[in-house]
Image 1 (cartoon, one colour):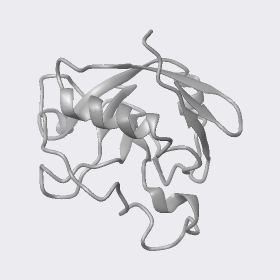
Image 2 (image 1 turned 180 degrees about the vertical axis):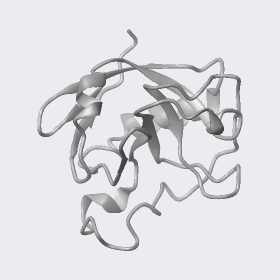
Image 3 (image 1 turned 45 degrees about the horizontal axis):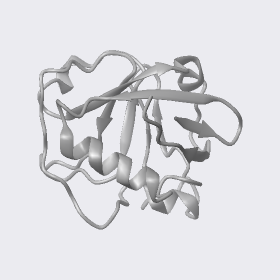
Length: 148
């Protein structure tokens, strides 16, 4: 569950059968507290809200380096048949398919041009109204991992 500093909780369902390495990576980073204190660095209305750049903890939001940080490694793409509908979680990457690391986006609307080209690894099961209110600069208090 993602908890924002300004209030609000977002409960996720992850899809290990479709993207086992992406799910494991996200859970490992969350358990280590990697995302705690990070800010949402990208919001494209009707498209995505994105977080996962560790530089967002300290860099000014208008710094040109914002949005390029990661965990110091990349993971191999796990493209699957899950459509990028509203509420789906995807792993951001650069132009190379195997360049994902820690940056995650939540779909604010459907974007089927991403289907089969990016890794979908979960979805929001409650709190989409919280996601809809997210603004650039909103800070993540914590991501708690539960077995529910």
